[in-house]
Every structure is written in structure tokens, then in C-alpha cells.
Image (tube, rainbow, N blue to C red; front, side, top):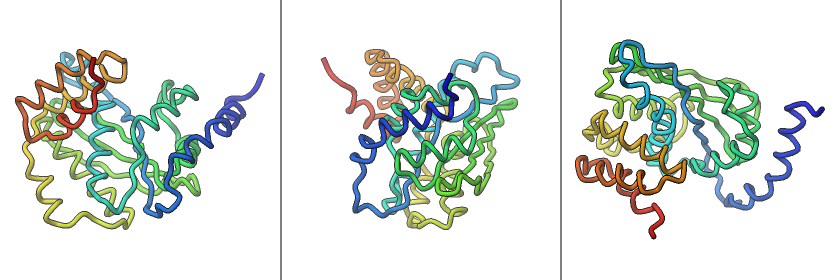
Length: 235
């Protein structure tokens, strides 16, 4: 029987041309891919378990969005990464290790892979990001940010800026950083948005649309929700 690593290489070689063809050969910006967040659970509030499961996808998408505010970075689209992982059946059996992340990163043309995790302890949320160097497979940095659950969007913003700083990458202009920090995105908006993404990934477009419409109506500052709503297929 073939080993899992052999199967990985075989499938990687099979799908590699399609992914490389999607990359702009002239684009020399550092590429970054963000994996789905690992959920370490909610301790002290079992009623939030379903919402925290949805945050695995929501936080991944939001961190991609924050990093993509910087035009000097190239972010791998979540859909492309998701398709690759689905093809190879990776990331469904627990935490993805640095070596596997590096292999995925090479396949999607990323320079760095971000492996995120989060935990809620009595409404105190901590997010951690591990940065893998795709070229060497080494774990370069690990950074954690903690705040009240209500400030979950602000945690993502801070984590995004910390990653850029740690890797000595070009930073967002200070005015843009300040604008992102000042946005008032409550935790309710984040959880609704995250659940909408779960529905979208499952092909449940009507449910995704309903939640995104609610977010755009109740929380107009959350422009990412409006963008996702506009991208949903109609009919």
C-alpha cells in the first residue's frame, strides 16, 4: 500500500500545473496562504460551541482579508487552498504540521504559510499564528494575541499586523492601519459571517445569503460581508 506521503506527492504533481497556471509569473510579491484555524474550544460557555466551530473558517477568511489590505503582499485565495486540501484530503484529521503546510504552500506558490488556532476561556479569546517558511519547511514565528470575545475582530487586525511586522514584510500605511483598528465590528457580526461561510462552503447558498444580508443590514461597516453577498451565485 502506498504511504500517505507518496500519495501526497503523486496528487501534488497531478494538480500542480493547474495551480501554477493560475499564478501571475510576473508577480514577485511575497505570497501568503492562511490555513483554516484550529479550534481549541470554548471553555465556560458550551452554548457557543456551534459558533466557535464556524469561526474555524471565519477567522481564516478574515485574516486573509486583513493581510490582503496590503497591496505589497499576494494572498492565496481561500477557495483555491480549500480545493487543494479537499483534493488531497488533508487538514481533516487534526492539526496540520509544518512540513505538510510547506508542501501545500509550494503547490499554491506561497512563500509563507500561516497556521492559526484559537481558544475561548470564559469570554477571553486568544488567537495564535504559526508562520512556516515554505522554502525550508521551518517554523519561523509564533505569535499570540488575546482580548475579550467582543473584540474578536480587533484581535484579527492586531494579529495580521503582528505577522507582517514579525516577517519584516512591507507594512500597511499607518493611516490604513488606524482605519482598520477603528472599525466597530462586534462579535455577533463575526459569528454570523462565519456561519454564512460554512453554509456557502456546503453549497447552502440560500442560508448563506440570508445571514450575509443580515450582517450587511445590521453591521454596514463590515464591508467584507457585502462583498461576499455580491459574489454569491443567483438563480
